[in-house]
Length: 348
Picture 1 (cartoon, one colour):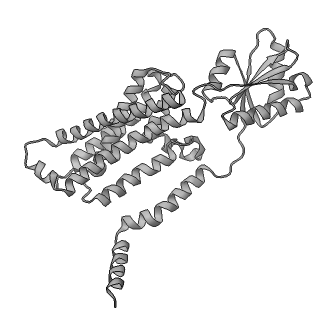
Picture 2: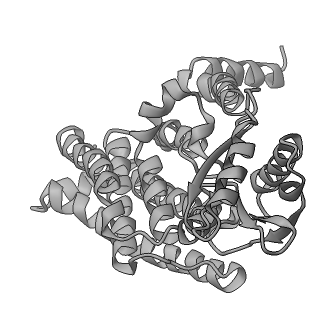
Picture 3: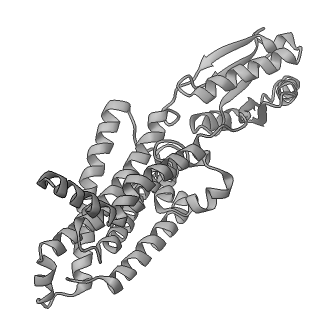
């Protein structure tokens, strides 16, 4: 038989004797397809959330609008004052706002965000509901597109990209670095020195945090210059979240690289942890798209907690009050990972 055949057969046998390779080539694509299928499977169309702005000078008009909208099962209606309606529309907690305008002759005014498909659909749903309610005065409305910073898709995306950057930097920047030093026998040389294991690990985490600050600064600066995205909440709270996320993911990277003997093993471990969180933790789309039964697990993931905290501070203008849960989740993941890494780490 030809050398080409023997070499090809040897490579095929080598591949099938490696469980990690089998998983990433055959298993992972199926799992990813299943997870994304859950997120985007056909579901009943959710009701449009429509707020009616309370008008103290015309309580009858407000109640008439609320009752007309409430008759439509496709509309979920509530009444708030003007400031609350604007805040809820800006932060995407409501899809559209109906403002009574009895004095103008138009009946009402629609406030909606034309950059959000849900907001445009809610405006149409409210219009149909008022028409079906047979109130001609309410059915004639003024449309007022409202596009404010904080309610665009890019405002949702950038905090997710920041969290993704922190996760990738911690896992690849630390986990791969440890595995690479082990492969090149550097860790074996470090073992002969009086250096403490904890000092070595902490130095990796701190250096990763310094690199992270530069990465985050560049991404945030680009987003501000191009898309006018800024931190609307407490800047110090934002920095604390960034530092906590970087430290937590660096600790997780240490744990993954603490016993990996080859770069291939390290790559498999890092991808096994990182890619599922990229999908389910609300980086590119809301984590609420997944079934309700999975939400407790998703909300307990460190990337989910970090993304939610970053969006609260950046888009909703939150301060320290938004930090307890994200910091708790990140602290638990980072602390346990670092403690386990100290126990299982090996130099060789």
